[in-house]
Length: 363
Image (cartoon, rainbow, N blue to C red; front, side):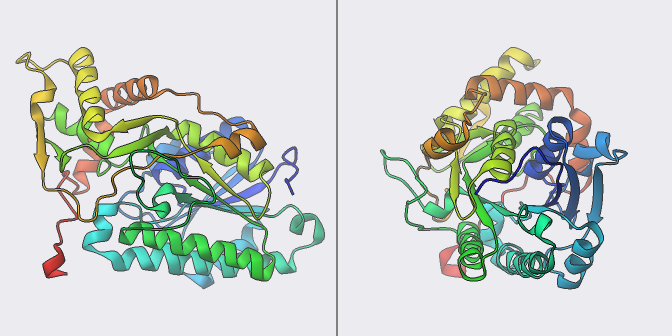
């Protein structure tokens, strides 16, 4: 059953200082009447500056808390009395999950369990006006489905087959959400998205890493043969879909969100190089593509992801507005216009170092 999107709601967003979470909050505050409570632990990839223009809004509240802290969550639900939850807080980098899977189990599985339990206890004691409106929207990834061959698309009925510690932890959290809906009646819905990109993305991820490395004249590391295929989704398209699903999606349902933009990794890196050749040519006039360096592949690297987003298009009318060409150009231009942001990240100790080099024979 869809919620009444015409009503002003108070939405508790977990992980709202992260890349997707901050884009979601900006979109909610500029395009809807809703109020937002941002609950974030402010770990290494958080970017509070992405929401700074809205800090003074009477519709925005920030709470520094960890989703694994049951007492803190209970206090926040009592204080703010949300009418719904959009859950994005997660450890999300596959390479980091290879080196240190424990943090992914703790945040993505234990944290989701804790949030579900807190939400259920709150929801069961709400008055009927809030109880009928409330929904728990869990934001997940297409990586839970595993790896595709050369053909085919992930649908909402594709069997789960996660291959990395990260995707396994997200698959576990998906199953918990579905179980709390089926067993306890908590009104839940799930969305699974393809690879996001856009402004403010922490530079451990492929696109910002390539942009910033190229500008610094550093090697552009491409894993393995670079033939891995990903479906790319601009973060602004993603958050439009999230708001639609939260407001109008059917509880108990799952919606896949994809950009309809498949690209091989090495070709995507070349696209970035060609844009930089045009927008910020090197003093040496050498093409950035000469910086591409093929490196040891990631352990268990999935070969191809591609999403069928037909369900959310048919039921909710969502389609992506960005092509990969337009979205990538806008993204490169944003990073070129915001060198201070990259410097801020670097000052916090991140220098683009390679992660995920733990080997099978040393695990």
